[in-house]
Image (tube, one colour):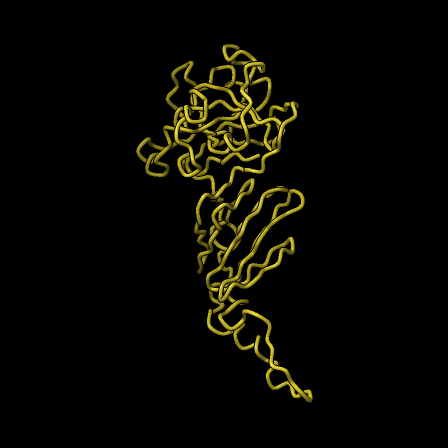
Length: 310
């Protein structure tokens, strides 16, 4: 990734920004990520866990309307709002938090708001067992994890489309197609080129950027705020337009300055069925960049192309 050093305000907008309430479905239950939640990335294995990478200055709120346990490996606490359980993640530094909701454990119900109070005399614990009856009954433990986490496809939540992130047009952002942008001083100082649809593609390292001399070099990179950058969605779909190769490749970022290309071996019709914006996300690269990458095994679905998030 290109690293630039000019100082500027650090904005907390990450690549997983949620302008409205967003439903995440796991086996047996739905959970809500609250509007205005913000993180670097939010992924789920589709069955049992949600993984959040989040930086200082960002916050994410997850709610279970059924009051299920929202246990996590970083010890963030759960509060009850009526029958809803609410997990608020507000880190002091960058954290990766794995949340493991448990439909067998109801920690909030309509009777659990407020402190239980009967004043009491001589020590008879008659009214003490209040929390216990509500905690274990109804949900059958059958929903527990039988399909082991062998689910290869990792679904990225919150990437969304440019429109869902508030993108209207490049002109609205004082940009034009082909502009090269960066947000120095933010959590993501990488360099991207933007297209008219609101997608951006990463220049993986300075060597690759220098393959495109017509862009004018680093002095021509436009500094934008992290908020502006966050309205555009990163794409990892490339085509070698210099040779007019019709194959579309997905890039897998394997390190700070390294990556592998995988041919997305699927029909155009299937690609659009899997992702309506597929062709809007494809960026042209030249032969030098194409040859720079090593080539990996073919992808057979658009869903296998990783979503880049710094």
